[in-house]
Amino acid sequence: MVKKEKVGGKILFLCEICGLGYLDEETARECEEWCKRTRTCSLKITKKAVYFPNPFEKQKGTDSTL
Image 1 (cartoon, rainbow, N blue to C red):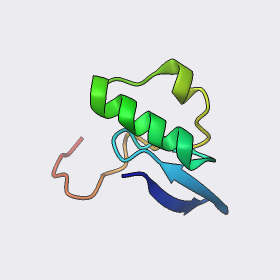
Image 2 (spheres, rainbow, N blue to C red):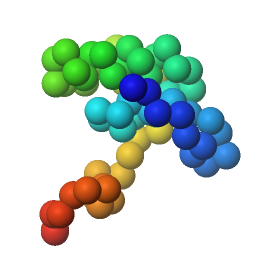
Image 3 (cartoon, rainbow, N blue to C red):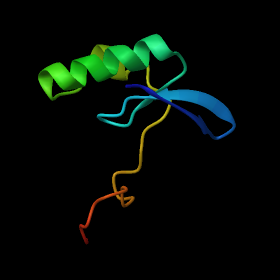
């Protein structure tokens, strides 16, 4: 399910699989469906992303240390 969040003063729609953010819900939904189906990212979809999560931030529920 696509997540709607305010990031940097803008409302973005985030793919809950990879965390990329888009300005429109349809593209975020497309990204999420692709991620679920293939377990990869599509360059065609990700080039539309306007938000990229920090891979070094600790995510909720993880217990990893660097």
